[in-house]
Length: 213
Image (cartoon, rainbow, N blue to C red):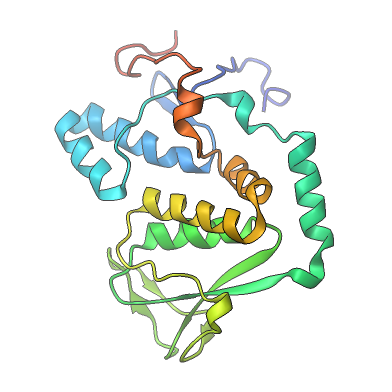
């Protein structure tokens, strides 16, 4: 991005930066703290905390350890090792159910499909679309009354998104090892070991109190 736009000033170790009317974030999972930051600025801390409880995120701010999410040699080796082991590739099933949390569904399916060892697909007993918690209609990728137990992922239901992602990373570690689980978290820029990372970073002021010049 800096190569295409030399005037950009990159700010390290922040999950979100606001410059005037433009807000930018880091990786995929930064959408959660970014959303809560916007809610806090618009509707106040109490409302942001209520939404945070709903999505399973108790704390949020601009802290971020950029160095923890670089595509390092160990990550590259993990990716190559998993790609080469094509004979161990799995197709995992997530059963669709009415009223399930669609954000949790997306995070779970995305995380498993980033392992390079598996692909997560949705299934249901009928071909018709099912409505999620917020009214999105999803058509199952496969019609099946059941799925083999060893390749069936736990039901999502209304599990909050952040909790669903934490549970998924733990399950990936149990199935494929810590290297693969950390590789997935790196791709999502999700501070899985957040407590350890946050101790090494400074607390940033809320962006509406201090924006970039």
